[in-house]
Image 1 (cartoon, rainbow, N blue to C red):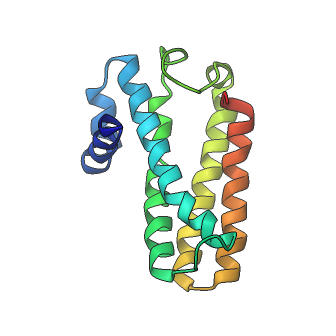
Image 2: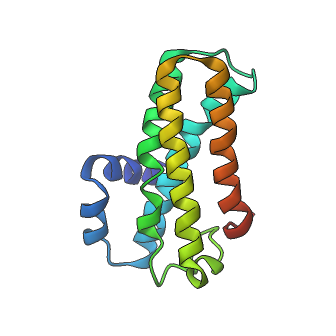
Length: 149
């Protein structure tokens, strides 16, 4: 767990381009995407809980989580490189057989997380709730097709 958090912090501090250049081992690419996905979940969870009424709405927290989410949602794609089809991963090998579709789904998720960050800034809870739903659908589309349970 501590290694995942340390890797995620490294991703945030060093930036995806530098990390991609430094990584040569498949397991490092898998760690990158797992760490980034951990951060996606860490930041989407509170937003989902607010939208579902399981957590009180807090504009400041919503803005923080949505802003971080919009950034970190861009990071996992760099970890999906040849040679990472197997190992400690929930990613299905089908990703590498249809990379164009996978990238399109990741792009859709990035568009929705960017919208979520904008909506959070406005402070309109109903709009936030609706955009959390759209963002969740974008995540689910990829998970349904490309993630092992």
